[in-house]
Length: 240
Image (tube, rainbow, N blue to C red):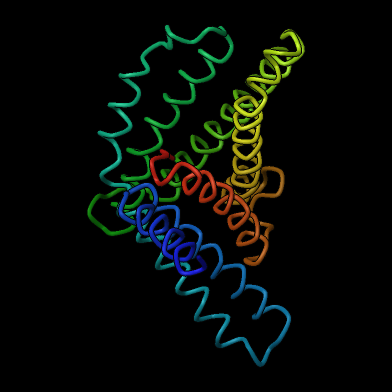
C-alpha cells in the first residue's frame, strides 16, 4: 500500500511537471527556496557564505529562466482574456469588472517585461529600469485586483452559506469549503507576491528596496507553495 501511495504521489507530481504551468510553479518554488536558504546562510553564518552565494546565484538563474519562458505567454493570456471577454457570465458585477481589469493588467504586463528583458539583453535600445518598474507596477496592480476579487467571492460564499436551508448547506458544504479554501490561498499567495512587488519598485515607495534576500525568498516561497498546492490539488490542470 505504501508503494502504491508513493507511486500515486510521484505520478501526480509528474503530471504537474508535464504541464507548462505546473513546471513553472515548481521552478518558481525552487527559485524562491534557494533565495530563502541562500540569503539566510549568507546572513547568519559567515562560514556558509560561499554556499549561500551559490544558492542566490542559482535563484537568479532560475528567475531568468522563467522570464525567458514568459516570452511565449502573451498569446495564451490573450486567448484567455478574449474567452472571458467582459465577463457576461459572472453573476456579480464587482467580480466581473475586477476580473476584466485584472486580465487587462496581466495582458499589459507581458509586453512591458519583454521590452525590459530585451533592453537588458541589448536587443533593444531602451531604459530597462523604466520598463522593469512599469511591468512590476502592472504586476502589483494585478495582485491587488486579484485580492479584491477573492475577498468579494469569499463574502459571496459566506452569504450563500447563511442563506441556504440546513439540508442544502449540508449537501454543498464540502464544495463551498473547497471554494473558500482556494480563494483564501489565492489571497495569501497574492499578498505575499504584492509585498515583493513593492520591494522591487523604485526606491521611495513604502518599503521598496528594503527587503533582505531571505525575506524576499520567504514571501516568494509562501506564495509558491500555495500555488503549487492548488496546482497539485487539481492534478496539474490548474492555470496560474
